[in-house]
Image (cartoon, rainbow, N blue to C red):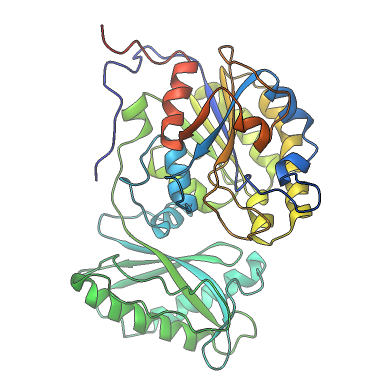
Length: 406
């Protein structure tokens, strides 16, 4: 697995200022047909607007023009990794996020707890967004069912609850391969896709997954809502060079959802805790600030409400995140960045390829507007850049890069 590195003599060995990255998941949106404002522009965001008045603004392309990113590639790009070269399936990120000790060669798979009808067709891809308690009970049933199952041969099976309808499956054994088709059809009224092999070497892994998913449906068949699982994001575990190795940064990540802790752990960040609320997350950020060079905090709700297709609820989620920004800004890092890992317009109710608004606050910024939104960011001095270049901008503003060349 290759990665583009800044030259070794370009990153300061003697440090520099602290960097804080705030990710408002899925913050980018599209204009409402009645008033022409996006969710971010319609929201009341006094704290973000105050920052915008003394910040540089711009837009990020998470992966490439026209490419709709998943959360994994979107975050890897923000952390300075080329998402087209550093391809990590969501399963590995979920496994790392729940603290599972992955070993090289483990096959990790993200599972959606889902509702399937008697004909095996998908009724609800997220099983009605069950509570953590209900979902954990279903995962416990799956774990017991797999322990008594003889269909796995010598392959070890681990299944853990992640959050709400999300779970993660880990297979440990020989002959595993992640070149398999996702079974999630991304729509209802149709059966799941079979986990087809996308490469001849993945044939045995495909057969095992097909039998495993059939057995999962049998185990869950007596339940009313969670009656099956959908598999996606297959990933053989591979280690990445850390942010410490690449950028000389000691990082800390604060996120309520395990997957985002997983992608941060993959690049060497420390995980100071598992917050149960945004207030707890802010407390962890404040406690971690003195001992780290790079801090990342994640707010999930704008994305979740965008995927629900609820414009007003996404506006409210952005306003709630804005209230949290007062505590983030009070830390006074040398560099404070606010952006998203992708856009999730409520009008589309799904991730999209649209550029994401970016705010970069530092003493070296060039302010151009007093509002944080897509229209203001479109004319900001940062212009439009690929998200993988954000880290070098942050390092420069933090005084952590030397001059390149003579």
